[in-house]
Length: 122
Image (cartoon, rainbow, N blue to C red; front, side, top):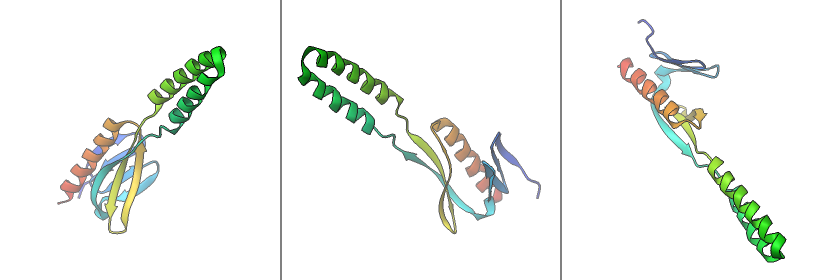
């Protein structure tokens, strides 16, 4: 049976017989299903910056200006927090997180290609 390529994006290749990601090769014959996962970004730094800003309010006029700066940093930090999206392969050996990215569309494209590869196996 000839190998059919469903996706070839640099370090990620999906064919009907294998899935290659960052030099690791998975045999598609061992993959029973594929799904996506989400790892939520942490807002703990933002929370700490807000606490510092609130504490600065008690320090008088200079504290007020410091609080404004810390609130600004907290806002900037909150905007920088991103979720991580993962490709999870189910095999007879269990689940395996094969790939992680902050780009949800990229992960969705890979999952669609993996699903096409599973279907093409028959």
